[in-house]
Length: 182
Image (cartoon, rainbow, N blue to C red; front, side, top):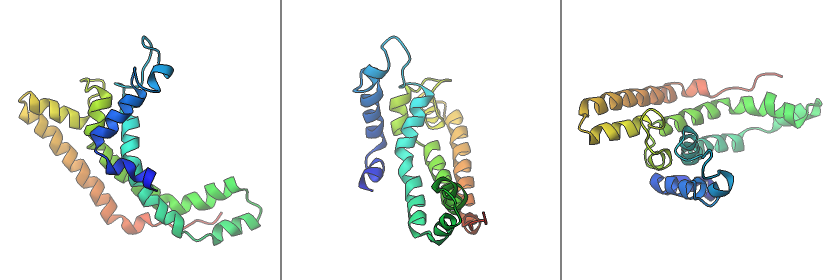
């Protein structure tokens, strides 16, 4: 659990720097996997996705794990007694029991990823039109003195965050799914 929670305990810029040192063109793994003149992972949209998964995964895990641990095993056992395979039990019993937690975790990670700055700026290169995310755009426009442009995107992000928060807050009861009959 400590290892999974580690990304929440370190600054996101440090996480981005670590990913860059690991997967970058001269990184520990990057230099062996990606040839110097060929494709690379860093400074691409895939690097942004990797950084966001690394930084936000503990949020989803923290929501899903307690639900999984407190879930009644009687339905899984009943599924096994009627001849269902483990795979069938997972798809028809376990996963439906976790739908609300998975949805909540996904919304939380999305909300966190939308505002991610520290790791993203290091792994993306902040290339306008290619790897510039909304927070990086706000930062760039602010530094260029284009406060109106930065403000417009900041308002959109704030509204998006409010919508996500509202869904999580007001849909609490709806997110607690019951297992359907198989």
